[in-house]
Amino acid sequence: EKNLGLLSTRQIELARMLIEEAQQHLFAHWAEPGIDDEKKKSFFDQVEKLDASYPGGLRSYIHNARQLLTDSKAGKNPFDGFTPSVPAGEVLSFGDENFIKFEEAGIKEACDAAFVLVAGGLGERLGYGGIKLALPSETTTGTCFLQVYVESILALQEASCKQNEGNVDRHIPLVIMTSDDTHSRTQELLKSNAYFGMKSNQVHLLKQEKVACLADTDANLALDPSEKYKIQTKPHGHGDVHALLYSSGLLHKWQISGLKWVLFFQDTNGLLFKAIPASLGVSASKDFHVNSLAVPRKAKEAIGGITQLTHEDGRRMVINVEYNQLDPLLRATGHVNGDVNDETGYSPYPGNINQLILRLGPYIEELSKTQGAITEFVNPKYKDSSKTSFKSSTRLECMMQDYPRTLLPSARVGFTVMDTWLAYAPVKSNPEDAAKVPKGNPYHSATSGEMAIYRAHSQILRKVGVKIEDPQVGIFNGQEVEIWPRIVWSPNWALTFLDVKKKLTGNCEISQKSTLVVKGANIHINDLSLDGALIVNAIDQAEVKLSPHVQNNGWIFEHVDYKDTSIPEEIRIRGFAIKKNDQTILTYDQPGKYCVQFHSVS
Ligand code: GDU
Image (cartoon, rainbow, N blue to C red; front, side, top):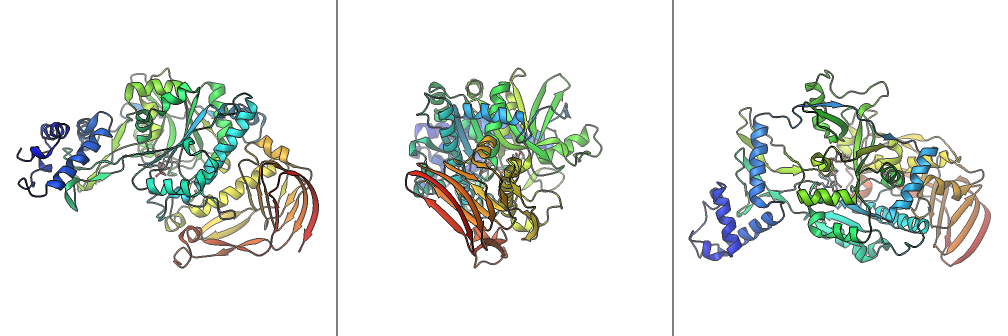
């Protein structure tokens, strides 16, 4: 009471609320007025911030925490009363008639979309010092994840506007959710690279705040161990993106300007945009309000499983069940072996890759009811079986893919399964953990993420008829991977199967040791024969027709050890560095028409 004079009216209200909610321990140690006054004020600045950044305020947070901690102590399962079963979704196969039809429909829709990238995570499992968006997706070109994403969105914008004449001025918005851990470095990455070609007002950064930690099962808020005038905080999870979008006012702006779709995606999947046109096409053709992208999933793989849950009372939903919950849920509902692979070699529950496509209208309607609050969970690590105290403080968490949980049964919720090689290669695990992954299961490492990009491009070219030599097997940082030719192209060269088919024609062959980089919107290659390294760069105003026969010593992989700190971290976490022995480089930086047929043998 004696310290109230230091506070604003709003802060006094919050102090009273904390006392009503039995949080007086937060002030028990406070000194007499005149001592530590600045710290006391900053304590309440923090309380105000915590209150403002949680839907319903800090009081709601405490109530929700109390309920979830009581349920957790009682061992209550969030899926009580629900029976899991395998849901039916749209299964696509790259390059077939259906796939091509959906890609075309998706390109048409893309200019009515906004993209939302959740990138507030620090990537503790990867253990990389920088932000993950700045990590090279592959080291042949060194293009970082954020650049791949931005260039893909710009290429979609260009292709879609062309298909929808009259819409040429549409700039597809990109929202990036950051956190205190990633915000300034994300801003810096964008600014120092001129937004990778986007207009600066096309990109919006929304920073998520952390939430208060909980010290015990009574939901007493935890003080920071190193600062007694501060509440300890931890990340609340990627589910925050919905509340942030809602409060930013962007959704209404988008609706007014005629947008129809919001696409959510994550920080390190170099393949994702290969799957976007077709999956957006599925959303549009099936009129889905929610469409989750999925891939075949190995049992117990660390990605959530898309599951149909049917309640005893008749409710039914198709939802992601997180990987640590799927196995126990199956065991508790009569599947004695839990989550196991079936005769296809995969779990029958498709893997959620957390790429969500939401129809904007119904999304806004739902958020107007919930303010973007997402079903939360708590995951306390108890000291012992009495479940009275925790090993360390905990907090409530939420996941963006839990958005459909509160939807009415009438909502059109579906999912689309794509080939893994085409759609999903995240970079999440450090070399040590990746090396321990059982053989046959994905590593999700920087090594496998890069190799997957080469494999995807090689497979796509095989599908359009290019002869690609079989891959070799290599072991880097203890992980066995397939090494395909290092083929990389810019998104504006080709976005869809038909783009590739149109731009690479005739009899083409590429040897395993080759590197092929194609950057530019108007490069046509016919009768390519490549055994070495060929790099083609052209500005959009250069129309280039090539028939190259190239043979040289090319670029090779040299082993490096992830423990060798003399090598930059973004390289050594892959276990290899590229040595450039020899290459043919073709650059067209002046507008014009070029028709070039050449043999280059060295
Ligand atoms: N993220 C935030 N804020 C947070 C936590 C994470 O923005 O507070 C972002 C990360 O930057 C990243 C994304 O959310 O872009 C996902 O984070 P993780 O990669 O740590 O996610 P997980 O591997 O734990 O799991 C998520 C889903 C799974 C599965 C998997 C697929 O929860 O169901 O889909 O991604 O990659």
